Length: 155
Image (cartoon, rainbow, N blue to C red; front, side):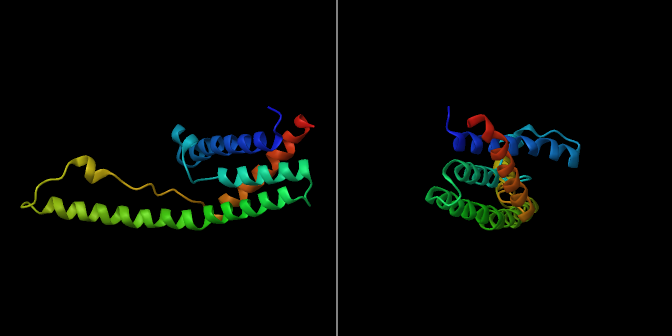
Protein backbone atom coordinates (compact mmCIF):
# COMPACT_ATOMS: atom_id res chain seq x y z
CA UNK A 1 0.00 0.00 0.00
CA UNK A 2 2.98 2.33 0.34
CA UNK A 3 4.36 1.90 -3.18
CA UNK A 4 4.09 5.49 -4.40
CA UNK A 5 5.22 4.86 -8.02
CA UNK A 6 2.73 2.01 -8.43
CA UNK A 7 -0.20 3.99 -7.01
CA UNK A 8 0.69 7.10 -9.01
CA UNK A 9 0.73 5.10 -12.27
CA UNK A 10 -2.51 3.23 -11.48
CA UNK A 11 -4.28 6.43 -10.44
CA UNK A 12 -3.09 8.17 -13.63
CA UNK A 13 -4.51 5.31 -15.72
CA UNK A 14 -7.85 5.48 -13.90
CA UNK A 15 -8.14 9.25 -14.20
CA UNK A 16 -7.17 9.25 -17.90
CA UNK A 17 -9.68 6.50 -18.69
CA UNK A 18 -12.44 8.26 -16.76
CA UNK A 19 -11.75 11.63 -18.44
CA UNK A 20 -12.50 10.02 -21.83
CA UNK A 21 -16.18 9.67 -20.91
CA UNK A 22 -17.07 13.35 -20.29
CA UNK A 23 -14.83 14.47 -23.18
CA UNK A 24 -16.74 12.13 -25.51
CA UNK A 25 -20.01 13.44 -24.10
CA UNK A 26 -18.98 17.04 -24.81
CA UNK A 27 -18.15 16.11 -28.41
CA UNK A 28 -21.13 13.87 -29.21
CA UNK A 29 -23.76 14.47 -26.49
CA UNK A 30 -23.86 10.73 -25.79
CA UNK A 31 -22.55 8.88 -22.74
CA UNK A 32 -20.25 6.00 -23.66
CA UNK A 33 -19.34 4.25 -20.38
CA UNK A 34 -17.42 1.44 -22.16
CA UNK A 35 -14.75 4.05 -22.97
CA UNK A 36 -13.57 3.50 -19.38
CA UNK A 37 -12.08 0.21 -20.56
CA UNK A 38 -11.27 1.08 -24.17
CA UNK A 39 -8.02 1.85 -25.98
CA UNK A 40 -7.23 5.06 -27.82
CA UNK A 41 -8.81 8.45 -27.42
CA UNK A 42 -8.11 11.57 -25.37
CA UNK A 43 -6.09 11.46 -23.15
CA UNK A 44 -3.69 8.56 -23.58
CA UNK A 45 -3.80 6.46 -20.42
CA UNK A 46 -0.61 4.67 -21.51
CA UNK A 47 1.20 8.00 -21.59
CA UNK A 48 -0.34 9.01 -18.27
CA UNK A 49 0.85 5.78 -16.67
CA UNK A 50 4.44 5.91 -17.87
CA UNK A 51 4.93 9.59 -17.09
CA UNK A 52 3.36 9.20 -13.63
CA UNK A 53 5.62 6.20 -13.01
CA UNK A 54 8.73 8.02 -14.27
CA UNK A 55 7.91 11.15 -12.26
CA UNK A 56 7.25 9.13 -9.11
CA UNK A 57 10.51 7.21 -9.53
CA UNK A 58 12.34 10.48 -10.12
CA UNK A 59 10.85 12.01 -6.97
CA UNK A 60 11.55 8.89 -4.90
CA UNK A 61 14.91 7.70 -6.25
CA UNK A 62 16.22 10.90 -7.83
CA UNK A 63 16.10 12.11 -11.41
CA UNK A 64 19.72 11.06 -11.87
CA UNK A 65 19.08 7.46 -10.79
CA UNK A 66 19.29 4.37 -12.95
CA UNK A 67 15.68 3.54 -12.08
CA UNK A 68 14.50 6.90 -13.47
CA UNK A 69 16.55 6.35 -16.65
CA UNK A 70 14.92 2.94 -17.18
CA UNK A 71 11.42 4.33 -16.61
CA UNK A 72 12.02 7.35 -18.83
CA UNK A 73 13.33 5.28 -21.76
CA UNK A 74 10.51 2.72 -21.48
CA UNK A 75 8.06 5.63 -21.24
CA UNK A 76 9.37 7.19 -24.44
CA UNK A 77 9.02 3.82 -26.20
CA UNK A 78 5.43 3.37 -24.97
CA UNK A 79 4.46 6.91 -25.97
CA UNK A 80 6.11 6.58 -29.39
CA UNK A 81 4.28 3.29 -29.92
CA UNK A 82 0.94 4.82 -28.88
CA UNK A 83 1.30 7.66 -31.39
CA UNK A 84 2.99 5.61 -34.09
CA UNK A 85 2.52 1.89 -34.53
CA UNK A 86 -0.84 1.58 -32.74
CA UNK A 87 -2.22 4.67 -34.49
CA UNK A 88 -1.26 3.32 -37.90
CA UNK A 89 -2.82 -0.05 -37.06
CA UNK A 90 -6.05 1.85 -36.34
CA UNK A 91 -5.83 3.63 -39.69
CA UNK A 92 -5.36 0.26 -41.40
CA UNK A 93 -8.45 -1.02 -39.58
CA UNK A 94 -10.47 1.82 -41.13
CA UNK A 95 -9.38 0.78 -44.63
CA UNK A 96 -9.99 -2.92 -43.95
CA UNK A 97 -13.45 -2.22 -42.53
CA UNK A 98 -14.33 -0.25 -45.66
CA UNK A 99 -13.10 -3.08 -47.87
CA UNK A 100 -15.17 -5.62 -45.92
CA UNK A 101 -18.26 -3.39 -46.21
CA UNK A 102 -17.80 -3.02 -49.96
CA UNK A 103 -17.17 -6.75 -50.37
CA UNK A 104 -20.31 -7.61 -48.38
CA UNK A 105 -22.32 -5.17 -50.49
CA UNK A 106 -21.02 -6.92 -53.62
CA UNK A 107 -21.97 -10.33 -52.18
CA UNK A 108 -25.50 -9.18 -51.40
CA UNK A 109 -25.89 -8.08 -55.00
CA UNK A 110 -24.91 -11.46 -56.35
CA UNK A 111 -27.92 -13.75 -56.09
CA UNK A 112 -26.05 -16.93 -57.06
CA UNK A 113 -23.84 -17.03 -53.96
CA UNK A 114 -24.93 -18.43 -50.61
CA UNK A 115 -25.77 -15.81 -48.03
CA UNK A 116 -23.26 -15.52 -45.21
CA UNK A 117 -24.41 -15.24 -41.59
CA UNK A 118 -25.14 -11.60 -40.68
CA UNK A 119 -22.76 -11.71 -37.66
CA UNK A 120 -19.87 -12.50 -39.98
CA UNK A 121 -20.80 -9.63 -42.28
CA UNK A 122 -21.02 -7.03 -39.53
CA UNK A 123 -17.91 -7.86 -37.47
CA UNK A 124 -15.62 -4.85 -37.66
CA UNK A 125 -12.04 -4.28 -36.57
CA UNK A 126 -11.45 -1.83 -33.74
CA UNK A 127 -10.31 1.40 -35.37
CA UNK A 128 -9.40 3.46 -32.32
CA UNK A 129 -6.19 1.74 -31.24
CA UNK A 130 -3.61 4.47 -30.97
CA UNK A 131 -3.39 8.17 -30.32
CA UNK A 132 -2.91 11.47 -32.04
CA UNK A 133 0.28 13.19 -30.82
CA UNK A 134 -1.82 15.70 -28.83
CA UNK A 135 -3.54 12.83 -26.99
CA UNK A 136 -0.13 11.41 -26.04
CA UNK A 137 1.06 14.86 -24.91
CA UNK A 138 -2.04 15.49 -22.78
CA UNK A 139 -1.83 12.00 -21.30
CA UNK A 140 1.83 12.50 -20.47
CA UNK A 141 1.16 15.86 -18.87
CA UNK A 142 -1.69 14.35 -16.85
CA UNK A 143 0.65 11.63 -15.56
CA UNK A 144 3.22 14.14 -14.32
CA UNK A 145 0.49 16.19 -12.61
CA UNK A 146 -1.01 13.11 -10.91
CA UNK A 147 2.39 12.00 -9.60
CA UNK A 148 3.15 15.48 -8.25
CA UNK A 149 -0.25 15.72 -6.56
CA UNK A 150 -0.09 12.24 -5.03
CA UNK A 151 3.54 12.53 -3.85
CA UNK A 152 2.78 14.42 -0.59
CA UNK A 153 0.53 11.54 0.57
CA UNK A 154 3.47 9.11 0.41
CA UNK A 155 6.20 11.19 2.07
